[in-house]
Image: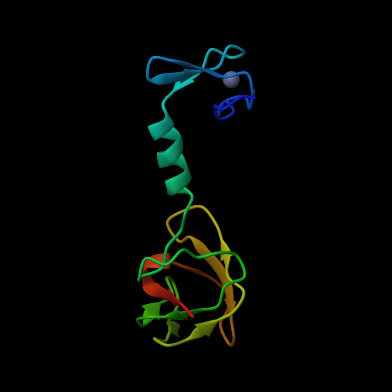
Length: 112
Ligand SMILES: [Zn+2]
């Protein structure tokens, strides 16, 4: 049984521990368990209250948000169903009734 995580670089399962670093014999990648934890944490998107958001969640907007380049405003309290998480500064992709496809920042929403 291999108790070590697979190599984050090439996915190899033949990793081993050398001192406090993990080593991959196949691509010579070295990393620490802390790196892995940090990478996993970075993929987690949280709402304004610190709750973890997932694809398909329903959220409400916690403040009026101007839509860049338009005169539209996403009103505080707007309910948005079926969000999709994406990479980037605006990390939520969604469709809002009456406004269409929209990107929001997770810091301005609250999970219902
Ligand atoms: Zn590797």
